[in-house]
Length: 402
Image 1 (cartoon, rainbow, N blue to C red):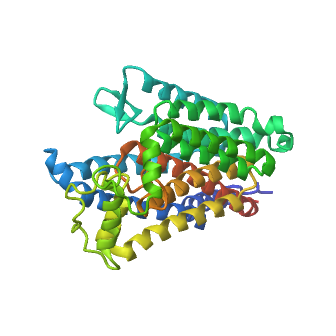
Image 2: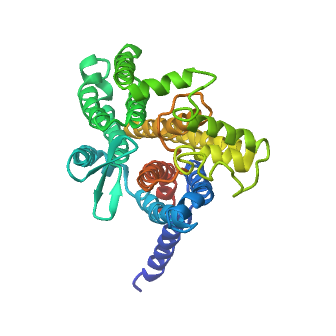
């Protein structure tokens, strides 16, 4: 009686396992993943092109050559895009575990602004410089705050009907974070951070009466900070003045931004042909880069940029709807309010629908810290979308292996 042969089944099992493993590697990501990734890369590409165009004159005048501003921004993009892809491979449980530490680290960095390492720029003391490296810690604080809010509110989701659990520790810790940034007089960043907090609470399905407390408090604080600052009050009054008579001072930048858009018309003057970038429009490569987009690429180019931000918002909403994890929903919602809200605040300022707040256009404006933190936020959302894909496909592989 011969012994049964077992080598063949083992070989078949090994081949089948290899096919399953290879299939897992080659399986395409979900539509949500691809939509977030594709839209982000498109906006970064547009940003590099427009930074090259809008910064060339100022860069040349600063003895950095026509490509000085572009190479700096491109360096951050080369660092940020691989970082985004690496972060997209980190599991969701990692972000939940280290949310408190991330927020604590960001708060410590923000405190360094008030040490000798801190530097002031444009009336705001919101930067730190260590040797040749400088950065804006408030941008990192936005990201850490979004993750922390998702972790805390997600863990307490079943307790949020009680106002104590709904507002504590979210409101006190958020006031601390916003207060540190406000101490550096960066009201624009504080507005965006307040939006992150309210957005996280909204996506946590807090009762409207609980949500009204931080909203009303934020509006009151904004009014107080505007009233006690003559410069902020003057900018608000200038915004309310349709004729904007103070041309050589506060009206200079808003008017030249409007003229840039008007010069572009429907089809634009052509890439690189902006007139306002010749030292007429301040912050042409930063806060007012959308005006240069409108001038060079016209209404069509401006609308394309708007559509891409709308697509990015839709992709965020799709990730939220596809998840059953409250941490994923809340964190993605907070990042949505941050990036999309900041984009439309920036565009609203350029269109003179809002007073000048000094916030960059995400992925497009020149600025290394803003670009890196925005790409890091996208990497976290991609990690959420990737795990959703894995969860959807896992039962199928379990059936195949059995």
